[in-house]
Length: 162
Image 1: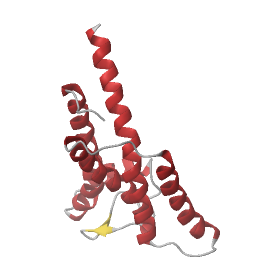
Image 2: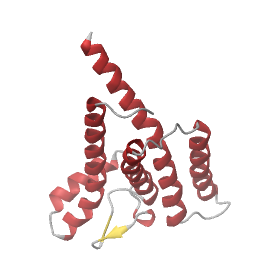
Image 3: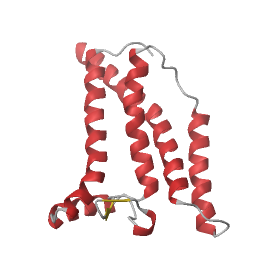
């Protein structure tokens, strides 16, 4: 991938801020709950209830309260966040090359397998297995989502010049 244009860098930073806000809210909900801000934390928990089951038995706890999403979703979102930071370094060092979709399929298969083991009762998945398979899937998914957003930004900027 060639160096980022100014518009692409701007898109990257907007993307990064969005990911930071998303992950920050996941951590902010239990913090606010621990400080007695039940309305604010409740709004965040409600928001995330639309994308996650939030089962307490499958969630990490901090500040004496569960995170706004389960351990698998936590892994997905924080894997996505870690790769967002790493991606920019790879671009700057000119070390980025496209990742095969097979890598993403392997990560998604591992996540589905972990889910299926627990769902079918064949075995038990754990908080760690849910988090790790989610983290890998989120981390790898970023390498498909962000380049697409950057490419879109590149096309929009060349379209505006015409």
